[in-house]
Figure 1 (spheres, rainbow, N blue to C red):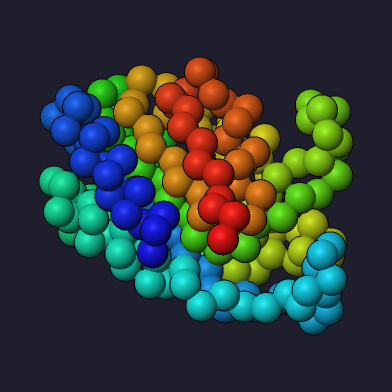
Figure 2 (cartoon, one colour):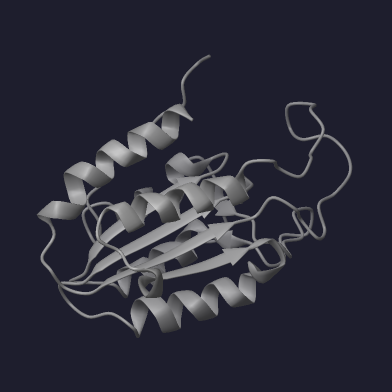
Length: 193
């Protein structure tokens, strides 16, 4: 809940400063995963479905409605609707093709995140951060969205006012590569307790 209060404060500060162009938001929440492996993560803890993402998306929608968005401005993909293919299609059609310079774009993801070996050598630590759609195959790396790919999508939003919020493990590096190119960069680190 603490992070949600922070987001509300950020929205209060950021949204009024943007021009009065169109507003569009894509809110994604994945709590129940189709192919979540049974077993342990890298810290020896069980990998499980999540409890909060659907509530997170509903709370984010309410916050956006309070700050000038209309129902028609918001697309939501929850659980089985949030496949990798649907996320890419809706991002392209709704956010890239459906907006223009000066518009306000919000991309929000709540769900699992992870790291995979870097394939193109652009990561100093040798790992790419990823977000996991509903149909992701974490062990095989299929249907994941790699930070480089999300960065490419975001770069297609040049000239828009873009807010990206990723609520997942390893979210700190997901948009780091596009800092200064597409979006202003504000990173939040998790509380220790």
